[in-house]
Image (cartoon, rainbow, N blue to C red):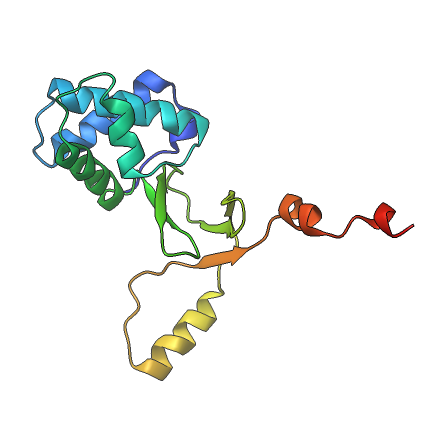
Length: 164
């Protein structure tokens, strides 16, 4: 399902968009889902990434009875409907972010866990060759890139003035 870029909308319209996604798969608009939608809309506006566990803990301040399963299910639904992206890290952990519908990938820093969205992708001819070689019908892909960002590389570099 193609979703508009959440960064181009207001928090209220993004909240409404999330609630429409819930409604489209038959999830009622409960108070708890409205709280989840509002918080996710705020995160979408800032481009911040989060874990489902962190989201649940933050939402407990708004509703101490909010079940963890309700939050995790909401995240899973929004991931499957294309509203959220799952960002994997080199250590095997993952986080979520509302990135928008445009095709892109992520680079993550193995030191500070900074996430950078990139528009680069492998050429379609390479996918076609891989599919042919493997006798496989490719229906989608994900490209995960890990390394160290410029700030972390700079922080790790030996101090040149110490050698003087």
